[in-house]
Length: 341
Ligand SMILES: NC(=O)C1=CN([C@@H]2O[C@H](COP(=O)(O)OP(=O)(O)OC[C@H]3O[C@@H](n4cnc5c(N)ncnc54)[C@H](O)[C@@H]3O)[C@@H](O)[C@H]2O)C=CC1
Ligand SMILES: NCC(=O)COP(=O)(O)O
Image 1: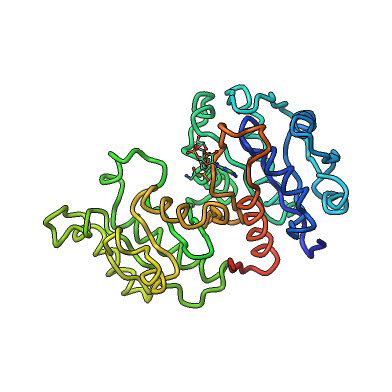
Image 2: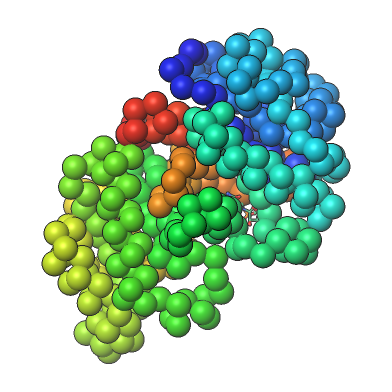
């Protein structure tokens, strides 16, 4: 597959997870699945060892971002990290944190320099990075931090899970459930909705995106009988968005907003906390949904799944969501629009 834009930069993620093998598997399927050319920011020895462990014939080549596309049909292009990575499939090791973070930093730098068209991240496990001093909840917040450093202004990143039948956005992301109520504000909902509406227009080609806003409490609070946040925090946000001309409606009871006929009424569901958004997205399309970060000055996508330590190194991890993430990133980079079909 030849393209009109530079290759995609892929960060290796946690090498003890399935990142290395979904990258290898995607390359092996490059012709059947029309996989977009990419280069992997990784450790060459680790990738060679993982391919040998799996018994997969994947020729690797150390290269530069600029040369990646010309190699892609015959080799999996590797742009080598300065930090080496220990190969311990299934057993995360905090010693790998510097290499994992270097890969993310380099992918972002390549997006900013134009060496990469967009970035796709393989999954990271949060805990081993936290143990090594990483101070961000996940990629989403760290990428916003890197973008802020470059742009010199605050950036609110928005996580969106996008699948063929449903898009969802968690307004609060990686925080304990006990903190959701104090973190959730009218202002945060409005900010998140504005970015979502804007990026669905500019990156997904939706002229007038319809935003369904979930409630927080059972039955969206049942008129205040089951909690006050739906009326006092969420409803005012919906009113502000409507007044701005954004097609937003809610708060909707979260238990009845995801069935098929309800989904036909909106383009994205804004949900109040992580699992309210990610459970329906993954239940409907675990193998196809893609995590897209909105609000950044570059394109970042990721598979919807995590590091899957339980199956790492066994050769059974499905590369489908990763391949879908490559395709959306490529489509957005090439045309400024992406539609998941
Ligand atoms: N974008 C990212 O960096 C993400 C990272 N994570 C991290 O991943 C770690 C593990 O999270 P879990 O909740 O266990 O979720 P997980 O997605 O890693 O695994 C859940 C289950 O799905 C299976 N699975 C996952 N991906 C698969 C694939 N491609 N093919 C076949 N089976 C697959 C696993 O074997 C496991 O049984 C956590 O540390 C979490 O923070 C989780 C989600 C996204
Ligand atoms: N649960 C989704 C997830 O963990 C992805 O987070 P991020 O690393 O993409 O911020």
